[in-house]
Amino acid sequence: MSQKEFNITPKIAFLGTFHPAVPTFRALARKNWVCVVVLPKEAGYKNDKLLEATDEFKIPWSYDISDIEQYDPNFLLAANYPKIVPKKYIEKFHCINTHWSLLPRWRGVHPTAWAVINGDESVGLTVHMMGEDFDTGAILAQKAVRVTKDLNLNELHEQLSHEQAICVLNVFEDYLKTGVLKKQSQNEKQATYVPQRYPEDGIIDWEWPASRIEGLVKALPLPKYPGAFTYSGMQKIIISKATSVECPPYFCTPGQVVRVKKDGFVWIKTGDTCLEVQEIVIEDGITKKASDVLRRGQKLGFNPQVEILSLKQEIYQLQNKIDQLLKDKNEKI
Image 1 (cartoon, rainbow, N blue to C red):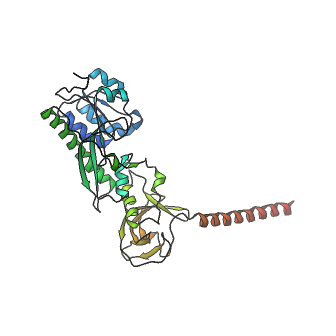
Image 2 (tube, one colour):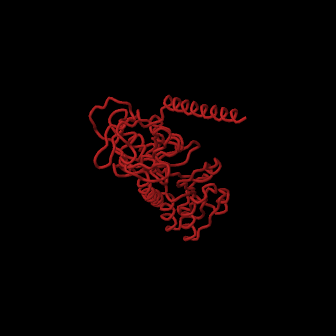
Image 3 (tube, one colour):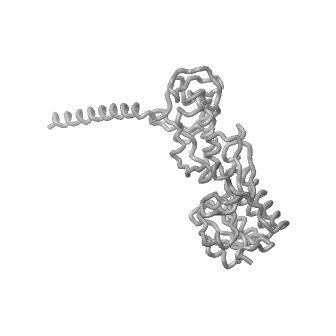
């Protein structure tokens, strides 16, 4: 018998963090299949919800993945776990990972955000075997969740966390019936990759189509995410609610406010049509109607040429003040 022959009862070392992992943990813990939990120490407060559930079920936990060996698991399951699992464990245990995309599309970090930004009609999750490379292993289960106009990223993540628990539980229950994990290889020709996103990636490019900017707004909802933002001069403006709309042809610069409506909504020209902005957040954190801040004809976006000119004017004014102060000083002497 090989080292990886199945023991019929799952005995799972559960690796995870943050609230999306909790429904999956609970589903497995209720079956008495989890023998130990490993959390990333660097996650800090993000471990709290999973720690509460771990204490509830009286399951031991550790920050050190090497501690799993004393519990003799036959499976290792990573659910929303941000660290690389050492190769020696992938070779020793049956290692399963959860990933929030419909692999092989959107391998990498923050896949749900990228799917929403790029206008995918469905996002999803994949339960798959771990491989030496990220998100490349054979698929065990998948579930799609339709993206609707009224859903933002927080709501999609809530749905995905519960669908993930169902998918993982189904994988193990099917294993109990058959003694095997049903695997399907990924099609490498269809693979796409995305990098980690940072707060500065939320800046709006008004040359983009309105639908893509709408996706960016939906993908970065406050307060869990930094928000999609633009500038009016040097003032940062976060757009918290917006929808792409059909509009008459406006021959103007993308980023220009072309219409202020009676309901307080504002139309901003994009690379194709217009973005209807309903709500914005200014730098002091106050939420306002778009019409309370934006006016018709105003141009949004960071224009380097305009800012350079503005800085030159400020420098000129400061130099004049310095010259005047020196002149006044010399006259007093």
